[in-house]
Image (cartoon, rainbow, N blue to C red; front, side, top):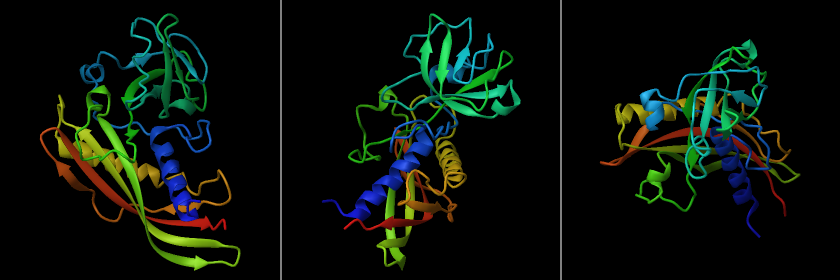
Amino acid sequence: MAHIATQAIGSILDHYADVIEGGNAYNGGSEYHGIPGRYSRDPGLLSGDDSPLAAEGAGDATTINVTGHSWPQSRWVRADGAPYFLLCTAGTTAAIGEARRITAWDNTAKNFTVDAFSAAPGSAGEFVVLEGFRRLPDTVDINADDTLSEGGYDRTFNLRLTPLKPRDQYGNGTETWDGILTLTLRILKHNRLHEWQASAVENLTYLASIMTLGHNPDHRDGVYIRALLPIEDAPEIAHDDKTKIVAAAQMPIVYRLQRGF
């Protein structure tokens, strides 16, 4: 049987990966909307050919209709690559500023399907397409070259949690620990039009700042409760070669687990 601490840490990492990617891998659903990043290397987004977009019909909170575009059905949904998002820049007030992950594109009906906005953006809705981030499997070295990079692994991250020391222990088997959560981000340099270090550090700082706001504690069960604190030191460049740059940031974390013996 796996040690309960290993199980708890795995759940914590899954939780924060959900916050970044969108969805909710821990128990299904789409509670977390995901975080779109900056400086995509997608050719369409770089050239401006794919954005901004204007809604052509009222639609609803999950369906956005745009005409005048023709893309393959798979254009905005990639199994291996970082997800795409629609950022609402105009329309219904409640939806402005919200970004929602694109889950499908229907090239016949000219409809995007997205995770639900707080309200339907309406026929006056306008959108910008942004690219998110994809978590690398734990078995893949984020510093290593791999054959999946050209298939969309441009913006990848991984997470590590290092337990430091226990704070409290309770008679019911509950323990509170201090730890360090390390977020590492890799960005490929291929065809990039901006400064690589600035891109990596800005995206990493942006991710870390959002992870520490509005997602604590985790209410999906009563066992794993945590508080993630802002980064104390500036992100560092962990790896830089001719093909990629890797940056890392560390955030203090306090988390609680329940021994299940």
